[in-house]
Length: 521
Image (cartoon, rainbow, N blue to C red; front, side, top):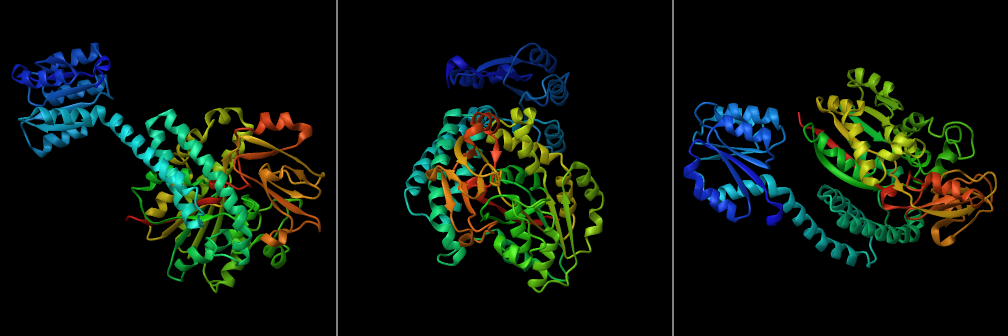
């Protein structure tokens, strides 16, 4: 321990003189110990001085240990208190624990017990952070070596999960140096992942190589197997939910659900709602939707909403899968009032075999972040964006819906259509007036761009994308690039740099959660 950064401890015991050997032992370890031989003095000291920890005897004359504890917590609610007692009566322990003690020890105590309790309650965070940093340093080297290999899609999923895990763990430590290192490694992973997708994407769709599970396959492969006339399955699609955001809200569901499957699947390109979410509900790729359902599919250049017919696409897919006789509901939540209304009517869904809920909030949040200064300031980086999403979820109608589902005997499938990435680098693009507006992908004719910064698809039919005209082609931004027009370049950079966008190729956009949960009740 650094003696210039001493930890101050108050020890209150009516037999404090008998504890001098323990106190001397702790002082030799670098701790500063102040003593009190009664509860009243202990409370006065806590009120007037700063302590990091209190050892409190439960059985003191006058003001008892539990009474002193109540006064200390009233004065300093966050001050850790360790109760020391001769009694092993359950009622006393329950009352002490209910009063939010940090730990308790049974007399007689020995110095090692005391030291361990201090480390557990004060040094614990520092020790955990130190261990986390050391463990990640080893993992950093392993991941770095693996990124040099030719990885398959399963290995990419594994690496992405591990990077996400360490990002969340290191975030708890608050070590900015380590966070910078993992950010650097994630950037390198995205560089290699772009090359991988650019090389393999066409092969997956045309059957030239083994394909990962993709948007148009998840309903057939992961949802339909749970559907029958005796089932009640809920499928919740939270628009624009990144894998790290799912891992952040997962603890809020731990009391209600057991996770039976925590998968990651690949969003199709473009990683944009009108393509990926329509693919989920139709079970088809975009060009197939255009061909089979020309009345339902809308191209980028068409007027009107592009996701207006998801229920119709789903109904057609259910019929195609031989499950057209099943009773299902489809609810899309686009604002707070709609969410509250569905919460009030959740009981009406219990007679359906399938209930689909599309929740658009996270998508609205990401777009609002682009245009609203307050939200932009609140979510200045991925950690803050993740925190903002978690805070919203904790108080949202969506959480109320999931709690309702947890009280039933229904299976819950939670997923999304695509993720987002915080864009950093502008990439110049020029096109005619019909070029699409998305910042991470473009469709159009006569486009000029930096070829090293995009995945270009000259023939849309090669990747099952529709062609607006014979000379249409698509480009997808790599890593954390975003498209900007040269004639308005400064505006695009100032307005969109550091915002969260989707449509292109990155781990965060393409590798997204698909989770099956079972109510604990």
